[in-house]
Image (cartoon, rainbow, N blue to C red):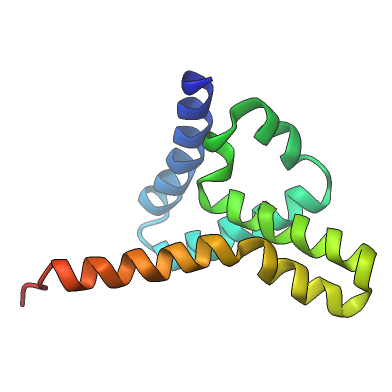
Length: 117
């Protein structure tokens, strides 16, 4: 399972790196972030991302495409229960843990490390 996660997650990261390297820096890391999250949403909405998650586990859920997948799955599940408002509620509820972790660990890193400059 670890090898599958490494290969799938590494391939996703390789695609992002190749996009940046081969486009004369016209595609920035910000473009990659938005593109990968959007791709995760679209691929998940088409029902194609869950088999990748089942195959690779964290190799598919940890990269940015996995965040998009989580957004889509939360929105779809809550929309079925709560209609149009459920779309927004479900996406936020499904991703709240990851967003909270990013904020908390970012804050801790800011306290521990001093910027150079």
